[in-house]
Image (cartoon, rainbow, N blue to C red):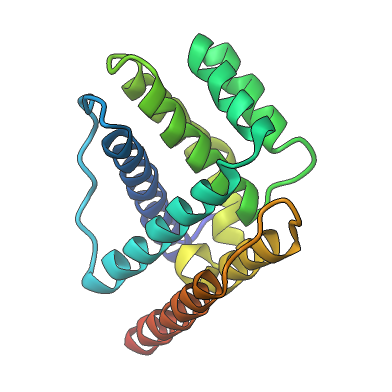
Length: 199
């Protein structure tokens, strides 16, 4: 039986996930210089959560730029953009989460959806966003909440992405990117500390 507190956490983390997906899609569409489709507006959150959202959104963009250099990733995005229907979406998420859910795979899904939305016709992009949000609600939110939610898991998220960046020989990362990453991780720790202190 779910308690009111766990339901509130689930709803709060779903809003965070929704805002992160929407921001990523809008960012990729703007970066591609294409027409922005009509998408839902993100819900307002507290200043601390907005700051964390900014950090995770920037982090997602940086990871997307790194994995964008991967030919296999680009082929997957191109293939999905050509067909973009519910069946291909289901096939995509099954490939992304083939053996387990991880923070890195969640970020990869967000990157794929953002980059796909930037490549397809504007009237199809909202469908992909809604499929993604439904998938988050139905399959990923329990996993996210069981790990303490976005706010409490920023360290794990940063660590998994750090390992992705530095363990991949095909995507070298510069010292400045490492410094930016560590600065972001420290900022995330400060935000989590402030949020826990205020709770």
